[in-house]
Length: 248
Image (cartoon, rainbow, N blue to C red):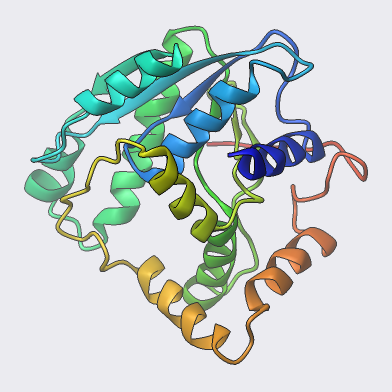
């Protein structure tokens, strides 16, 4: 956990993610990434120079078979408030709309519900669980499937909602997340979504794994290029203010 905390703290400082006196909501899906983000921020707030509070928030989309009770117990063990918001996302996506590309609509509805839930509680900052590998995969997905160079930003201000998104896990690799989740025995909620493991992201993940057999430092070079280019919003706080405006 010390290694994870070191990487999270460096990312927060590089992109000036947290300010004195803020409350940071953590979007907790029940997966290992968001649970580790929550655990890291709950630990970090006990000694970080800028005092801040942490709240955990889950958008329960109604996917059959998902039980968030263990997440609630975990939050209590961390001394963190836990809020669960029920939104019929599964019903809308799979039963009413029957989308050909359901992942896109599902993600959009979840983001909207999450941002609405925190603003109703007077919170203006939310931490998401995207890590190092997610950033590289998203960058390649945009090039391969959309023909553009781009990625989500470490800090994103959504002017329409007056919400700032931060991604403090960006310096942490997926294998580190997996190892930490096992050591900490995080209460991972298995996702029974019918498309889990069959997305375009999974295709890119497999493509990268194949390329890494020949180029083992591939992901590190891509991530470094994103910072050095620099991709919009990826300049560290030493170079330029982090957090460019972006409408939702």
